[in-house]
Image: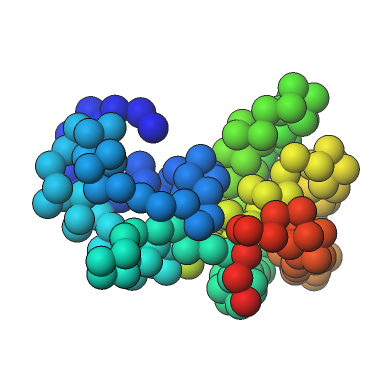
Length: 223
């Protein structure tokens, strides 16, 4: 984990660093967290670290058991499904609102499709995930409701951990790029009906990989 430098409240910075590491699976589900080790690595005192951990507990990403310790929560499919439902519902609405805009400049979205293709060819999973997130965030921005994207981020962390597990499969990346392309095409043409259906299919695809991921990473999941 990188050292923290940005000027903002220390506990916020610690939370963002730890939440990002958990989301990206740099800290794996089930991993134990040592306050002493984290405080030293992040070069912060125990107080802001504990404040950040409380927020992680509230988000359902970490659990603290007295006299036992702190650990990263396993992935629970019920949490993934809840997050999927919220994301699909909001993004379908955002897409419809974006289609109503008289001017729909998809230049930025097309650039992100090119970046996704580059990352796919380079096997850059971190870059692909970032470009994927940026594409969906831009749809919310084009809709005029960027706050809806921010609102769902805490819950979406559960979905994001699940999504990260599926990315190493090259076939999955190709499917995602093709679906993103179809979504952008529908937005450019203002085809709300077709685009909303594409977004729903895209959002629900992630759960199709659940059995395979559970078999491959049994220690990452809990009922």
